[in-house]
Length: 135
Image (tube, rainbow, N blue to C red):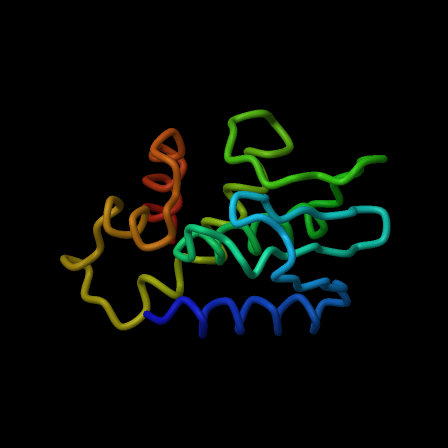
């Protein structure tokens, strides 16, 4: 599983669904990606310190738009359990599962390996467990 290929697939998904992207390497490595839900535009930090989390952040921002989330301000990636953010996180997990699960035998699927692949925060373990169970 190559992170760059997954990011490319997610970028193509966004483009195919009318989501505009600003991809930049000018942000701090610790600056999260963000979304303007009104204009359906994602600011994607290509300079992230944790490259494994890039697909999670991108999928999370895509899900804000697909979920119809509304905000008058930019929404920055935050892996919290707050209602709107949690829904975007669950949607992102669902988007990333096929990249992890495809071509694996059931006994090879492990929630902790999945979480490690994408640097998914531990407080989302329950959401990951449910998503894998429902996949």
